[in-house]
Every structure is written in C-alpha cells, then in structure tokens.
Image (tube, rainbow, N blue to C red; front, side, top):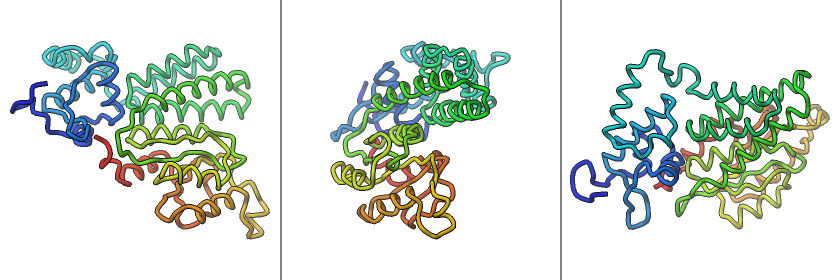
Length: 322
C-alpha cells in the first residue's frame, strides 16, 4: 500500500470503516485474511488503518456479495472490474434486492429446512457455511440459525419432525457454531465476555449464539459450555477480568411454588447469588426463551440478541476494535 497522500493514505480506523461500509469488524478481518480483499496498514499499536481507496473497494465488494456473488470470486478483482460488475448487476432484470427477501437469509434458511427434512447433515452444514461466507455474521445468527432452531423445535414439538431429524440439525448447528467461535480474531485489549448457562440448564445454543454475536462486535469471548454454578462463573470472571457475563436460560423459573409462595426458583436463586458475588462493575445479561418472567436483581439485564449486541457495542467495543 502506498503511504503517500490522496486516496491511498491510511487514515481510517476499523470502527470508522465498519460504519462507512456496513461491514462488521469480523467481516473486515475475515475478508482480509481469507481472501486478500484489502491490505490495510497498521498503526504503531498494531491497529488496522484503511485508506479511502480501501473503503471504496470494500463498499463495492459488499454490494456485489449482497447481489449474490461469492466473496471468494470477486475479492481479488481490480477496483475497476468491481465497479463494472456493480454497474452490470444494478441494471440486471430480476436482480435480488437485499432486504426484500430478508437480506438473502431466507434463501439459506429454506435450503437448511429442506436438508433437515431429508436428514442430509452434510448438505445442511454446507448451506450454513455458505451463509457465513455470503452474509454478515449478525444476519446469519438472527436470520438463519435462530429461526432454523425455532422452526425445527416447533415442528418437533408438534410431531411434524422426527427426533432423528432434530438431532441432525442440532449436530450441524453445533459444528458451525463451534467453527465460528474459533475463527474470530481478537484485537489486543479487547473487552472480555464470559458466556454460559445456569447450573442444570443444558440447552446451550442460545449461549453459543450470544457468544458469536459478541465475538462479531470485537469482544474476546470465554465460552464455558452449559450448566455452571455461580461460584464457577465468578472464578472465570476473576481469572479473565471479564466485564460482562452472558447467561442463556431456556428452562425458565422451574418452580411454580416460587411463583406463588414468594420464594425464588432455582434459576432465580443462582442469578441472585451471582449478582451478589460478582464485582459491582461487571454487567450480567440474561437471555433466552426461559428468561421471561424471571425475578431478578436490578443489576441483571434481560435482553434478546439484538439488544444484547447493542449493549456490548455501547459498553465501549469501538474503543477496542481496530
């Protein structure tokens, strides 16, 4: 990269580029590392610094991938060729318009459901991985993985999907989420998030989805797996200096007596103990289908994935992502 003046001068940190292009920090790093889409300069502190030309190129690449072109096919094309393709696509009849059909997520979701009904685990994994390449991670989580798990769960509960089919989906989703979690690169000084579920809560997909969302916006995620008591969560926070604890609850309060008799349910007791044991500056966020109606201490927040992502961004992520 030329370090002189003009459009080649590196002057934009990753946070600015993410805002100007609509790409997440994870997507920017992935496109650079896997596909060589751009080669940003580095500051003395090791943070990525982009030029105006980089920003223009990234905008073109995002536009082309939204139109259905795989990033691997266009990442190494020259900027002039990218511009020509973008103009060609904009004039094509019947062009898929991002947002009109769920930003492309619904196509991947439909293909995943067909693979699930056929019990074709390989096809399901391939489609999920294809969605990761073609879509932003947040859209994969909220537009593909989350509705896939919900639809499969609903169909299983209604008897329209066999247990074996549900297991095929669970295995494929777990493999893709595991893969996503190890693919993120964390910048030096990134804030730390600890993610798990309360003791006795074995459903961990919600926690894994939250972990991916956090990693996508620049947090270093310490994923502890499911079912941990409060004292073990506190130990993890102390050892990692975590700023936020994320907990997924699917089973819910678990005690009708607690609802009527005034005593806390087992889940509520664990969350209360956790809030008492953790340092005051550590934020506790609870989500999942079982979180509704929980009686919680004031310092414990209840959020869905969208608001959870915003909470992490608002907690200062942009100061750490570079």
